Length: 158
Ligand SMILES: Nc1ccn([C@@H]2O[C@H](COP(=O)(O)O)[C@@H](O)[C@H]2O)c(=O)n1
Ligand SMILES: C[C@@]1(CO)OP(=O)(O)OP(=O)(O)OC[C@H]1O
Image (cartoon, rainbow, N blue to C red; front, top):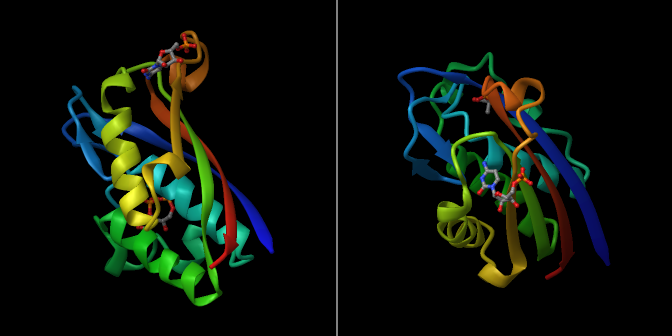
């Protein structure tokens, strides 16, 4: 049996914060803001996994009103949700992600992000695709006000 899920997330830029994407710190002149470490890609993947198993969304499991998740490491949040995926008898089929950012250039970091995500999802790097696109300077991503991310995940029975 297969289960499919999709995720989408946006975080706003803020000066003086590190830019964390896919569990890695990406060199940039500003970072993303949020209740957690604001890892927009890992939040997207977490939501896609939750969607696939019919378990709601990241905010339901880790409310941004709960001090326990202040500055949370999003990799740890994803690992907790992945335990739920495994408990329900599923493993990764494949995942395809898109990071929507005018800057920074993601291409030099895509290989390392894929490796990190594959590790978190206990999968092979070939099961994880990560893409990036600008919006040609249009909209909030084009104005470099924030970064958006999308993902589609396919789970298969373990
Ligand atoms: N933040 C980004 C955005 C894009 N890329 C790479 O550039 C290619 C062209 O982007 P367009 O938005 O002009 O289509 C894209 O396919 C990515 O390979 C990137 O590395 N980082
Ligand atoms: C991760 C959580 C929890 O710290 O906080 P944020 O970093 O604000 O992220 P968001 O994508 O808005 O949703 C989930 C939140 O509850």
